[in-house]
Image (cartoon, rainbow, N blue to C red):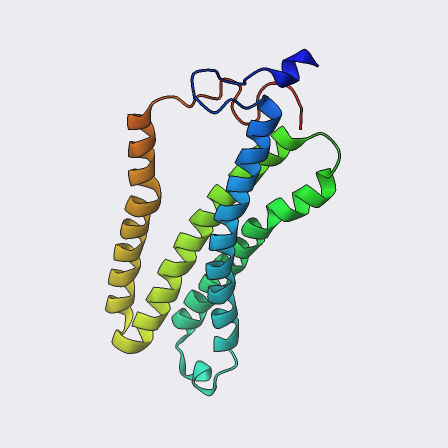
Length: 178
């Protein structure tokens, strides 16, 4: 137990145990998910209502397929954003915080990917109605590129510049404390 009171990484200036670090990481993840959940739930809710509009039947078959793709991606992103809460319920008081943080991180990343694709698909659907197939394809490609740059390329570049994390065990490795 003495190990539980040692600073997990004396070089990071935080003076926290491994358990405190896992708690902090979990709380940071929850804050991120709160932001994402609002957006994904709004997008999902909006898309779910589209099929009940009178003009929905005016869509061409390919636009209906695009709509179903957008709805499916939005629902998947919502499920991924909510999954860490379900995992927390299942693992509550099981001393599995390291597992919870690792899986929560994976689901947040997967949820962001689904969210980006859902946004691009929703944009394509709107542009397909307003401008036709060419506009839909153009905005979908531009949307995916911009989202990939903002949500993947830039963060990965910044992460590389920042160097290795100070957590030597990292999520998913080491003992199951928490």
